[in-house]
Image 1 (cartoon, one colour):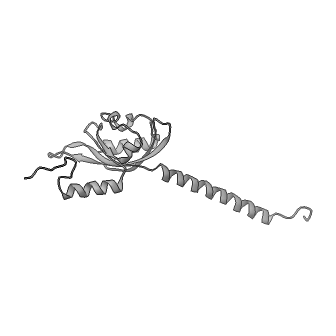
Image 2 (cartoon, rainbow, N blue to C red; image 1 turned 180 degrees about the horizontal axis):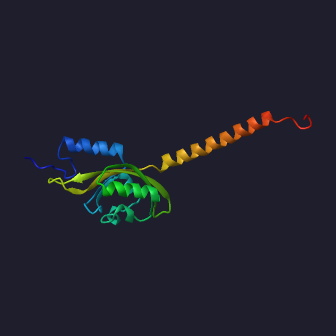
Image 3 (cartoon, rainbow, N blue to C red; image 1 turned 90 degrees about the vertical axis):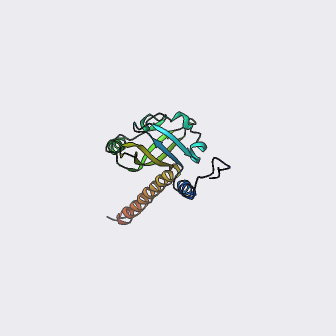
Length: 164
């Protein structure tokens, strides 16, 4: 069997396909061990967002520096983790070293070893900050339009002053 010339070159077509799909569907990929501590991070946003993956290795998701979790959301995800169930699109905010707040969406699936025992989780994450900002702007715009329509409708049904 011929050795690969470049160690970063995929071992086979399946690995190449998987890498392509991961790049299209997420900003980064992560893995956790059976104690739910991160063991691996890879992906483009991790570096672009100036997040040092080394600072996250060995931590649980609840120990991520600058992470802010809604109590109800945290409890729901923890219940999934405790039950060893997949979780989809768990959202949380992270304040970066630059002070900017980013919204992250995370999905993960449990991993079993060859004996069928729980071995951890693996999953993907996406920075959805821009989408969340656009949704909030759209919500404010709709509320503003509703106010205008309401004011116009109320004004149309009021009797002119002096003609009661």
